[in-house]
Amino acid sequence: MSNAKKPEDLRSHRWYGVDDLRAFGHRSRTKQMGYSADDFAGKPVIAVVNTWSELNPCHVHFRQRAEEVKRGVWQAGGFPVELPALSLPENLMKPTTMLYRNLLAMEVEELLRSHPVDGAVLMGGCDKTTPALIMGAISMDLPAIFLPAGPMLRGNWRGENLGSGTDVRPAGSYLMEDFYYAGGIRALMNRLAELFDGSAQTVTGRPLAESFASAETYDDDVIRPRNNPISTEPALAVLRGSLAPDGAVIKPSAADPRLLKHTGPAVVFRDYNDMAARLDSDELEVTPDSVLVLQSAGPQGGPGMPEWGMLPIPKKLLKAGVRDMVRVSDGRMSGTSYGTCVLHVTPESFVGGPLALVRDGDPIRLDVAERRLDLVLDEAELARRRAAWQKPEPRYGRGYGAMFQDHIEQADSGCDFDFLARGTPVPEPEIH
Image 1: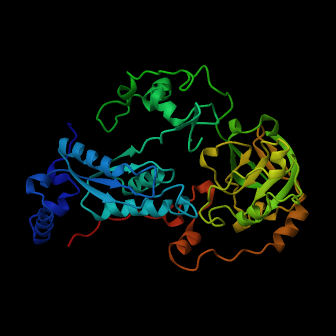
Image 2: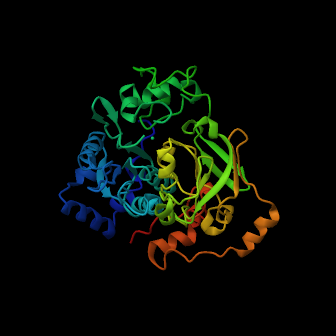
């Protein structure tokens, strides 16, 4: 490529190419690992950041994929080095991978900064791994490409397709595997071509439009033309109001249409354990019109804003045929899978947001068309409750958890660390 850097312009040159004792040590230590000078001298060093783990179903194949990536880097004239990074298995890591997303982002940034790296291939796929890898690479500001793990294959039971989740449903009846067979990302981008700047250059050195110009769609019911959407409603809606001054999120296409404008009495659970203990009790005072409220599920309250937002329907209502209710929390939900679930209520209850002030029986009004979520109480009563509210004890007394609770921002700020979102750029490391 015409804009390829000269060897002396590479970032790794500071480690390998300088004529001094320290660079001699770097070269000799690299040779001790079995490489020759021809393998790395004057070549861009490409970090293959691998989040492989035997406890991460999304990434369990990455051990082999990393070798294939490295082979491609060799073929392209680079020097690949595999750097393992924290793996975040969405289903097995507790209390939630969101608690550790920023830890991985920091790790990636520092891996790339502290090593002789000129660019990176980021290997990830599970929900929080993808943003964490990209956040870290962007903060380091090195050329990087992302290699997705790909969707998990579906199962089959008596002729019915089964999935371990829902990332395309409930907006339609298909799973990500169907999306792949229908043409995948390239076909989708082709359908949306007029919305892109097709002249933008990609990592291949060619314009973006060339990467999907020849793509075909093999199933119009999965990847639909723009003039035939599955729904004319927006995929997501941001709500505001007296219950969510800084915002909350709902997926209208997942909700029962009759509940998109609804007012009902609150049934409040203090935290997840309280909900688990009482939800299915026959003594629970709840009706189909009730609004289920879960507190202490936010960034600090969870901690880490776990995927608790899909509150179950109480068993006695399920037996009566109820399949959806309005549910409100400051937690998250995987893909906003289904139901009239209002999520990410901000500020969260743990820091004294209005959600912390809700009591059983309080009227809660949801109006998606107006983008409103309100606690229907007069200001005097809210002020009285606010004055009586007491901040809960911190979740952690030491370690990473303590750092998390002291520096995590709210959902409307991306649950980032305040010291990562602000401040001056970090300088390149000294090499001595």
